[in-house]
Image 1 (spheres, rainbow, N blue to C red):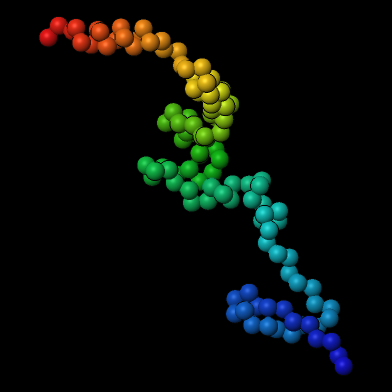
Image 2 (spheres, rainbow, N blue to C red):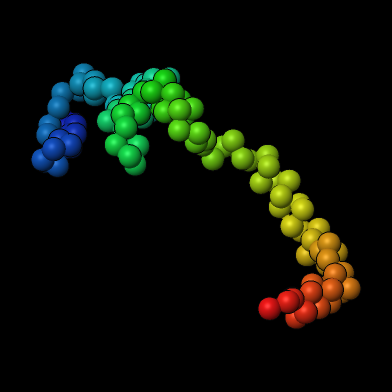
Length: 112
């Protein structure tokens, strides 16, 4: 009895018999596709105003020109603000009862 070997055709999903010395073609993965070291992720990319940002340089120039930034620029400041918010909730904030009473008094006694 001879042993048979099959592969599945990716387009038709049919099983195809292959010889024992068959070597499958290299699969396209992130490593050999170059996703990590080129601008393929920017291909055809446009900003919400329609500006072409289809490369890293164009994207960087667009961000500089419009005064925008990416979310990763805020990672450290968000951590500091989170700590500040937690302290505010634990310690009751920076306002005292007398501050609130004075503000209410000023609002109620405004000249009309």
